[in-house]
Every structure is written in C-alpha cells, then in structure tokens.
Length: 117
Image (tube, rainbow, N blue to C red; front, side, top):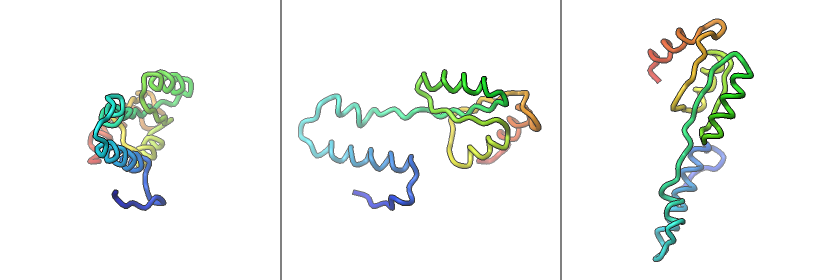
C-alpha cells in the first residue's frame, strides 16, 4: 500500500488512492463477481465543464442541464472568476458568453488559446 499524507492531499489524489486500494483487494480474490470487476475497472470519472456567463439565470440553467447528464460543472461570472477557477482545477470544456463585462468572450478565448497552461 502506498504512503501519503492525508492532511496534504487533493480530492483527485484521494480518489486515485481509494481506487488503488480497491484494485489491490480485488486482485487478491480468486473469484470475483463481474459487477465488482466492472465497478473497479470501468469507473467513469465525470467530465468537468466551466461555464462563464454574467447572467445568473443562464448559469443556473446550464449547471442543472449538464449535471443532469453526469458532468461536473463550475460556474464563473467573468474572466477573473474563470482564472481563479482554473488555478484550482482542470476542465475539459469551457463555455464562454461572448458578451462578458470588461473582457468579452472573444478576447478571453484568444487569451486562453495563447496561454501555455
């Protein structure tokens, strides 16, 4: 079993450690049910979407729709909140409103595209 400091662990790391323990215990069994095998080896992690819009109603509707389909959703009201969100988590998709205040969606998209991270 691998050693890790539980005080300094991210949620993703914790999830990976739990999966590793499950797999090791599963491998020790001589006979394993197909459901147990599938739950350990075919675990789907939800894709993460970041929605950026200055309209709270639009944010709420999109959040409910995507969560209903099994996605993890983070909301941001402007470019500043988008940057703060990206500092702490990775996302597979960013939905941008083109009419954002201060930095519009087109400018923000261009900045994101040219950013190295």
